[in-house]
Image: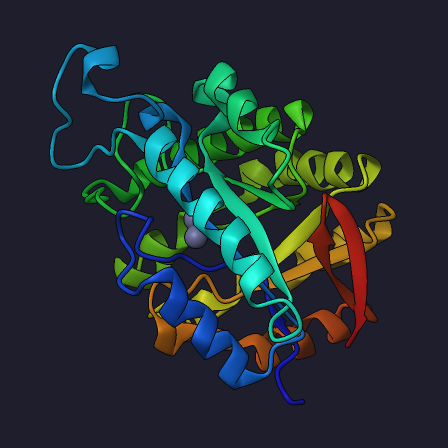
Length: 281
Ligand SMILES: [Zn+2]
Ligand SMILES: [Zn+2]
């Protein structure tokens, strides 16, 4: 068994993914994964439908995540039973921007069918996803990153999740796509506080391996973040390829495992009813 686990993936219940849940699970079985989590998007700032927000979504917005999340959880729960013995399937969700609508977020996380909640931040309040921004004025990047980490710290203080996903997400676009070197010196205190909070609360830190197959060329987060998390007593590492199609399932996980081992981690975890289960690396 080469590749061990993949705990971050999207089926076609996610607005930006391509393949059906069945096809994703079939591929996970083919790869012989010891654990595989489906974590479709639930963007909390787009939880309700257009009527709730009193406007139609523009091209950058996603509304109606309550509905698609329910569909993903319901279908994954059925498949868990159907594939029992064939696939260690974990029913998860990627909870985006929880701090923008904590009521919506709490509606999601209390669902008893969920094994696993990963929390992430794809945008700042009143702006677009980092994916859509143009970064025309690179001098604004440090302040943007500072605001991003402030929001992540708020998210960690709220803490109703299992894993913090792709801590350095904006760098996928800033450094990867736009080749702007981000000066993060002013963010150091905040990232330290984020990692301390995660460790103290017994949360896991995700190594997201999608960066290996993108222009960014590295995992999210940085090696120094893993080391700091460990120094604060953080025990749990999660590994996810963040695939949005079958062909990316478990992509880069072997590199992610090496990355984790180099930072001193001996096992990764997956979750069952929000309880961490260790797999030796
Ligand atoms: Zn994400
Ligand atoms: Zn994702």
